[in-house]
Image 1 (spheres, rainbow, N blue to C red):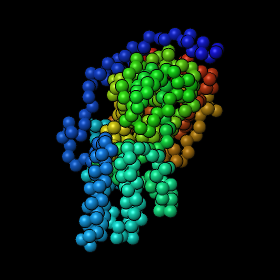
Image 2 (image 1 turned 120 degrees about the horizontal axis):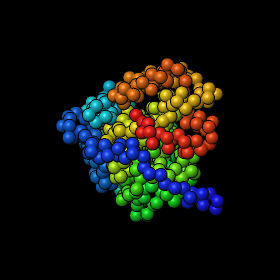
Image 3 (image 1 turned 120 degrees about the vertical axis):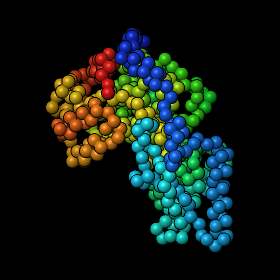
Length: 400
């Protein structure tokens, strides 16, 4: 076809020297610090566990509960607290971790009886799943007991509590969300034994599976990862075969990323030892999404070690780009009161305050009270993003 012929004619450019320097610095930096290497105490972290281990842990909890009931004590669950007061940003790790405070959830309490019943039922279902060595979706789990759960949020909500309590990652529970993220570009891997070449995935890309632990042997000649906030920008990059011009891996979580996309990004970074450049909207919500990739969501801080990439560089679209590229007024949007409130909170966030250049960009956004989406660049032409904006950024090393 004409499109396929055009794609084959793309001439790869030499990788810009700023990208090579960034990659070199990353390799010199070596391994990231861990809770163990820092000798930190009082931090709650979880491990990837095989099905048999999860099964044994749940059986141990059930045995303790049965003993408490037989002694006439009633029963309760002791769960690591995921409240804000038990979360801490550790500068050396550059991510949020969960501390050691716990909460008790007794069955014999009006306030917690329902949550305790739901947690007991969910553990029973997880035990069945891991015993059969199968995986189910969150939706499957919900429909096993609709009358008890009433809403899917109820069954979803206790999964993190169960994972925290038994000390495993959430994916080790074998309950997964539907696939959300997508990847395309210069990377290949085995997915449960099947060979996947992401240069041959068309413009839609390859869906990132929820079961990232099934992905092995990640290889490729990519020089960097281009992490994209939205699917629309991803489609433009994929259709224009941007990865053929500048060897890279292009990943999107289609907005707020799921666990699978965050795990996959970390796995690609660790396997290929390449930097990550972020392409996000110039608004507080885009920065919030970027913060989830970088330092974790507070809801899943207990598993931040496997879900975060703290050294992502902010490539664009940055507030300073609006003036630099003369983005027309009609493509700029006024920030809402909610945007301004979010921006104010972000100025106090650790992942922003550690970097003076990020602070400067966000202050500029708050001063002008204007935001813009990546698609604003389309005012200069639908392919301006891939043919002008990104190539220039890469050649200039214009990231922070």
